[in-house]
Image (cartoon, rainbow, N blue to C red):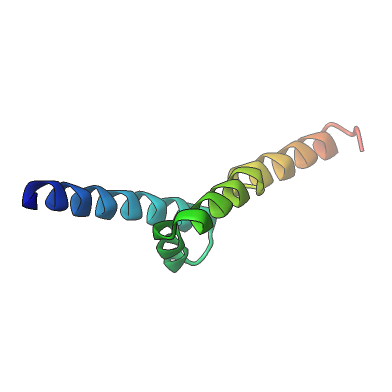
Length: 74
């Protein structure tokens, strides 16, 4: 029994760390990773993260706009 609890604790800490890194890279507050410990809230947060605009997408869109401007397409 203590082994199972230890494994659950370790996997929870690893999961929260992974979400901390995801929220950090999104530019969102890193304490949002604590929401991932709440069962139904974590599902809602996963959906919000999945459909939100990521910083890399915003950078790509701005680079495409700049490239079009340089080529005279705008």
